[in-house]
Length: 113
Length: 112
Image 1 (cartoon, rainbow over the protein chains, first blue to last red):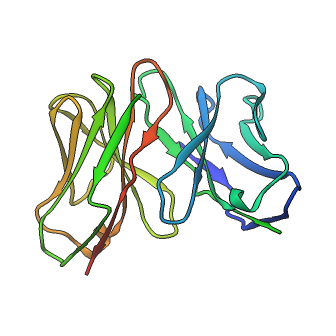
Image 2 (image 1 turned 120 degrees about the horizontal axis):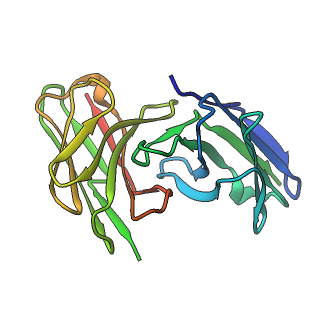
Image 3 (image 1 turned 90 degrees about the vertical axis):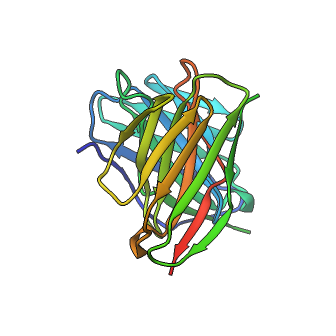
């Protein structure tokens, strides 16, 4: 069974700090990796995608991928209270998976003023 | 731009009643469409996906069914709801060669 594991948290960081969220996956053939943000009662919102090893930066967000170690992480710089949400890691095996994503349970992030 | 519509936003249904949730996508053609469910305190579980009209694949055995009568319409149904069907139901789409998945606003279903 393909699994995606995240620390459920909650992760609490002060405003202005760096929040670090981690995710591991079991399917070594996974090709595409995504981070979603989900506010309470709302649907998941795509914030980052990464497909190759290394770092990818978009504003205050940096996604990091290490396929050899089968982990993907999300760094949020200068964390703001509005970043408080559940962050979902999702993995796509690619090939003939028809775009099906396997999601982790999510990490709850709280940014306190 | 692509837009995904999902309704209703909330629904309260008695056990044993039927269910029909509808999802439509605008601004794209021949999308892959998906139904996910998120139970309270749990992760997102893929229920069904469709790569074209009339083509439905079920991921888990359950009390639900799905249909795709039109290219940009995806329907989730049940003949008799169970208490365990409660949850947050999300429709999603993926278009073209893009691997990214985009979600509708979701339906919070409570079966009482």
